[in-house]
Image 1: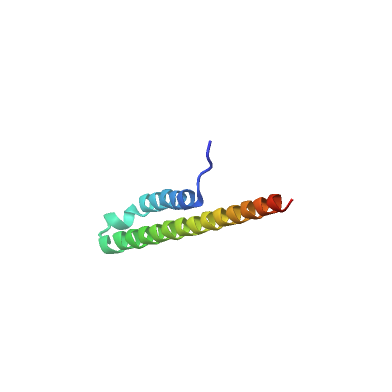
Image 2: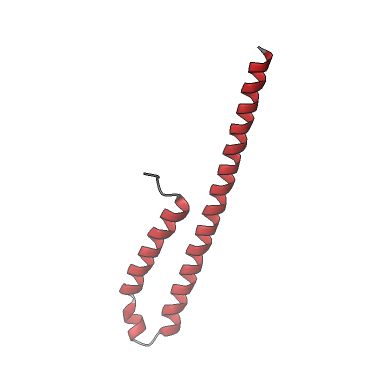
Length: 84
């Protein structure tokens, strides 16, 4: 089984946490503070989405560097074999 990537795991945990906090804060919604309740939810969702995008970009950069290093190491090994 393939392990979950950080760009999926961390935002998922934060979304679950947001759901629990929204449920706990439903009293604010019922008391008429619609703007505050939904404003906090929207800002938090935007932060989670930005975190997901940032983590995904970092993973892509890391994979690209790893591929370049593997290519570089493979090239060095083939050069050493040719010199022998």
